[in-house]
Image 1 (cartoon, rainbow, N blue to C red):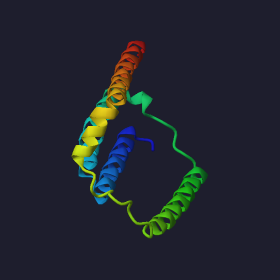
Image 2: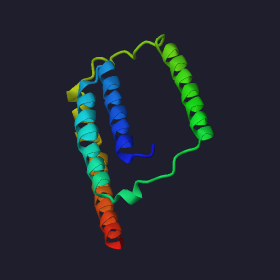
Image 3: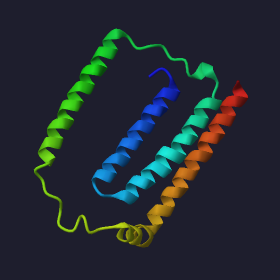
Image 4: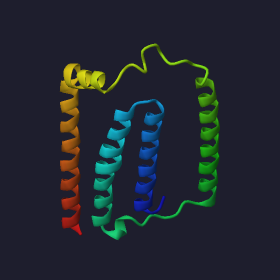
Length: 143
């Protein structure tokens, strides 16, 4: 994709589709977290970062016709495989007790047994944001 803003919008559509899959699995909390955290906060950060970068960094040469056709063929094969796998998954029943787990059970696991990993992940995300701001400032100073 030549336009990074369009690519970010397609990524937003993929994130919202993932939230729809969570809703289909009766995981309402995960769906809302997907929309709020990823589709809301992180995509907003991406769009702001894309709009403040110089336009010269966005210009990319267009792909050739052969590359476009190969990409379309690969996407078609992937779609056929996904349809085949999803048809096979319909025959598999849910695990017993899967529908009984709710938000309270998830919160107990997340903030109980996995509290350290949860906090470590937040520090990793924070360090990535700081690194992105530092790189953007250094690149802006070069221009």
